[in-house]
Image (cartoon, rainbow, N blue to C red):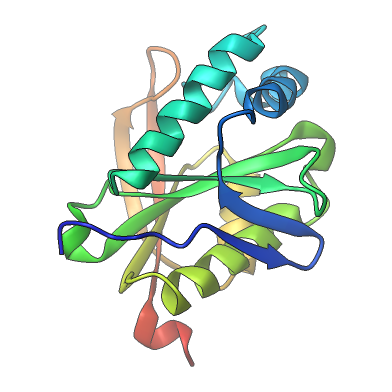
Length: 190
């Protein structure tokens, strides 16, 4: 498999997961700027004062890569799609599409953090990923200092697979320990 006509959207209880579209730049800019201090310590892509134009360029790049089946970046929107609550995606960091493996990444807007949205969004991504996508394996990888991310994976039912110690930190010049979680289609159905 070297190409996938990817599912576009799924409505969940209280939010919608969907591919970014042209015009979503303002929503992304607002979410990132509202959450910069919350995101900056752990997310290398976060930058202060991200303009609408910069965000619009990003969402168009996300959309292009989605349509080309190179990466599947997904927004977490409120039910009427007027507010971005966070972002997630199926990223091909474990190998090409043919491996049928992807890594789920996620950020939750600061104002929505701590309310269970991350756990519900991850559960939805796992269920959607195994039901409507071709994934056989889905991974979740996070900095060991990111306790919220670890709790999210555990609460969503992912299995801890290990710890990579002393990796180069994604943010700053230091080192980090990386926690690895995984889920398999066959086990998820149970």
